[in-house]
Length: 332
Image (cartoon, rainbow, N blue to C red; front, side):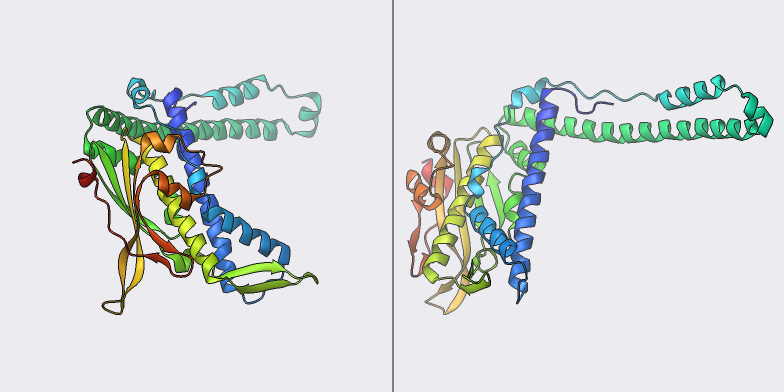
């Protein structure tokens, strides 16, 4: 049985598959990085360096992969999936084999006719079971597809009416931000018919490596502390790359023109001497400007100058606390 027929079902299924593959890739890259952190000695030098370089490239390129824009009008036009019918294809084929069987001279001579007949009868019983199992699988898939269809219809109608609850459901259904969860960052969001405000918590200690791997002239692995300036710049690129990716995903699924991202982490509060959750990047990204950017070529940190952005950063000290951006203040 062909499941999830029609353009939009195929598309949404493909989107979710692509997202799962991206999340799987993120998990694998993050896993390799964690393994490297735990290993005191690494036997395969070339593999270790390759994995390290892939990880560095990946955390600076979160913004490069994003979902295609979803056409909610097409979603609303899509008919419901068709309930599968019980078929007897395998039983019929096995029964025909049984009916066509005529004991040969040698079957009669050596007394194998009864054995062969019983084997064919067993094949008919097995074929019935296979037909039943396939029907059960198809029915289960149909029920999943029907549930998704009802959900997408409800969400699509809500989005057409610009309902905030439908906007939230769309993001919960497709889960476009899960890749950042795989890397250790986490986020929450609030959405209105006009904009979405995302609070992103990032943890540089767990995400950014504090070492540099290289191969010596003798082919051995060299592991040195990463210079603080390089660490801070890498962390800045990661945070800004995440902000761009969040905006791209939000615009792909929601008919909004503004995405506000407030990124925070634990920073030392010099007035109390304690580490506290503080905002390190606040940016208001509008759709028109974002669509003009060439994501393969840009530097994530430099790209923030295209938007209303609060960010204080230096190579020596890294991020400094800044004020949040609230969408309500921008729309006044």
